[in-house]
Amino acid sequence: GQCITHCPTGALTARDDVNRIMDAILDPAVETVVQVAPAVRAAWGEGVGLSRAEATPGRLAAALHAVGFDKVFDADFAADLTIMEEGSEFVEFLGSDKPRPMFTSCCPGWVRFVKLHYPQFTAQLSSAKSPHQMMGAVVKNTLAAEAAEAGKRLFVVSIMPCVAKKYECDVPELATEADADVDAVLTVREFNRLLRMVGVNCANLTETPFDNPLGLSTGAATIFGRTGGVMEAALRSAAFLITGENPDFSVCDTTDATPETPWISRELTVGDATVRIAVASGLENTAKLLDALESGEAAFDFVEIMACPGGCVGGGGQPIAFNCELASDRAGVLNRLDADDTLRYSHENPDIAQLYADWIGEPLSHTAHEWLHTDQETWQI
Ligand code: SF4
Image (cartoon, rainbow, N blue to C red; front, top):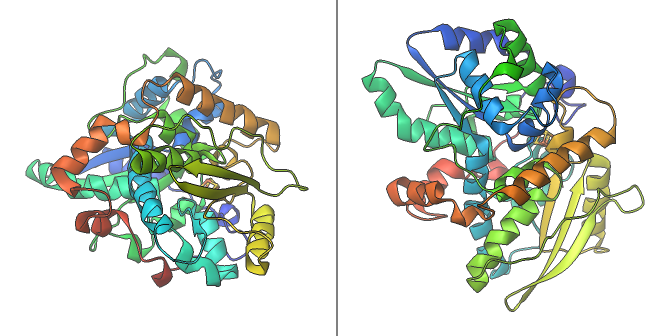
């Protein structure tokens, strides 16, 4: 493992990957594939002088093409895929007698924290890999043959709000066979520097869509970038799986928890089941929640944890702004994108349905386990 003992998100020892990525872009034997996390679209413009109105997802995709990446995909697509897997896992979990709660697993800062400090809960983490790891596995498994025919090898880059993901992509147990799912991670700050190095004039770019077939996503995926978003997205699809209807509830439309209320909790009725959920962000709040679960003072069925206060919008790799206001502004950007999206449920993403039809079969299938899940008890970041 890496030496990030004192900082669970890895922000104190971040390594710089800009030069490695430029080398890959300039290598004619390499096909570079890039993906951007949900929270990146809410903050990337801050570091290159764009207003929120100018820093659209379309201009972000154009900027990535301008840097020279061959394929520009969206980690939001993989967030929808994560929901298909994790939502299905949760529905199975609800019908089982496994110890409560099930915890989300897409934040490597949280995953590292629980494995180090509360290992008794490790087995209760979802087995779903995080979205960018899922995307890497899908890219490597579905596009490598085509690249090889053209005499190229794939190099997958993730643009992330997160420093911990630099270390997550190196975990050997998260590789599909011997090949890492993701070859390198750039933080948003590094991405901003890359744009300046290459001399991209972002304000003048014409908006372009993400490339397909791994570029289409739903509003449920976009809200992954703020605290409560993964829970809400998972429950939108889990409720559909249980009742056959899309729910109209919003599970986390509240402001972030305060020191007096370290977590937000709800009891939701889904079909015949009552589902007790809780959401926390920031590791101080997380420790309080885990202590309450341990003592029996609190009991939940499903818990979402994000290591950074406010979730990935306030991530350690985002443009620097040491205040909470910005995290909440950025969350507002994601909420608006979700509200304006014509697709708001991961199970309604037609390209996700196609991916299952062509390659994976169904959620939790054998291939899904090979590509998209991990045994949480076997590895440490
Ligand atoms: Fe990374 Fe997001 Fe977790 Fe922060 S909250 S450590 S940015 S995944």
